Image 1 (cartoon, rainbow, N blue to C red):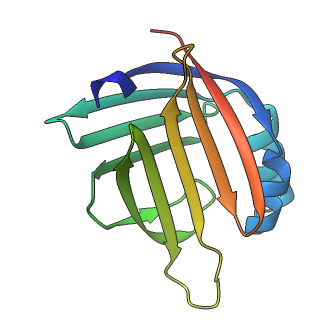
Image 2 (image 1 turned 180 degrees about the horizontal axis):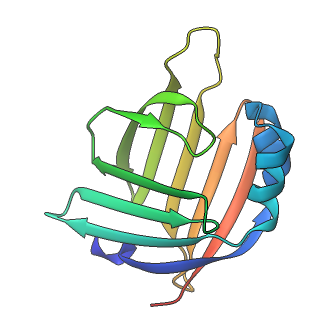
Image 3 (image 1 turned 90 degrees about the vertical axis):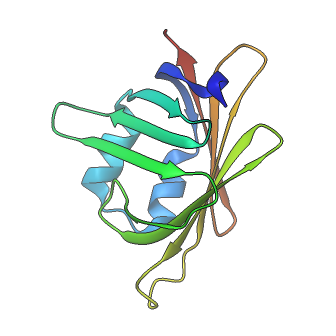
Length: 139
């Protein structure tokens, strides 16, 4: 899984506003999410322990740390509490977020993979809404 390691910057984003809107993210956070170009730093240790550090602005940072196949508590970048699990499938990291609040039935899936150009492609899904974000490797 070392091929995920590196630094990335958002290159393109499709349908992200609809994705965030479907999640119920407030308009201000959606605006930040749509118009910023976040960077990612991914590190892997022991082959299955991942750290993903995302910096969207000087004020908005998000760290995700997990072991493949283990459920963990996760506070999403928009403040929702979820139970997350990341699985490995054909060199893709598939993250499933299950809501902790039973009133919120929105299950999110994030698929991260490295494409033929060495970009990190993240496909975000909630309900029937799909967004694709491409991050270009910088290091």
